[in-house]
Image (tube, rainbow, N blue to C red; front, top):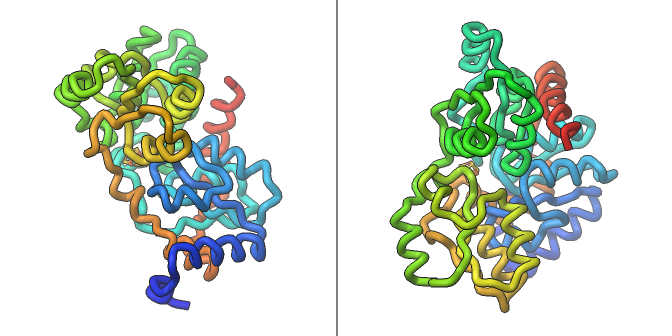
Length: 309
Ligand code: SF4
């Protein structure tokens, strides 16, 4: 079948079709928090990129279908090398991951052999392979603390690196990269949201610029935000990509959870549609492949992070 033929299906038919294919092919569907709500509804697991990849690795599925962006599907492949990993749209990249290449990281290491290189998981498999250790937005502080007094290069997100440096006081050099979705959230957005929802607690992602992070009541990853909203009754303003707020409002319709800005939309996350997902699964298209050498070195960087807990 060709992709355009799936547009004849109704949404309900697509859900059924994807469900059938999933059973037939022993597939597990991972969906990132920033995906469109209709895609979130087909998830076996819904969450953040590393958590999803770890869950999929524990299953006996033959196929992992990752509704997200490329570095996420790569992480799933790094953790599950014998499984087939599919990405519904092969052009769904990440603007943040694109800020660092393996060549640039190798060249930094050549000039600064005494530095430890800490790489946020929002990076390519090649860049992970050149790193000493990976981190997520949930564990970046712990990962940096585990390196003692080492001089650190933190990449590719300067805002997350800045936040970790502030919390730990570590000797951190920042890479000039950012996530455009979070970096363009402003202190003006904070003022407007606080005026609109007085009394609501503000939680922001550490990929936001430092003034926004400083103005927040809490700072944390998407998983932290989700758990916070699930476990508390207070009104919340959430500063991250709107997909997460849509998820929370869908799952907990009686809670009062607002986006810090409606403009925080990751374009490439929205490339994934139900039609493309059905097509990728049916035709087993857009397989993610990583060379064994890169996979092994990238895996070591992820493993060191997981060992920290
Ligand atoms: S929200 Fe930012 S970090 Fe996440 S996939 Fe989009 S560009 Fe990359």
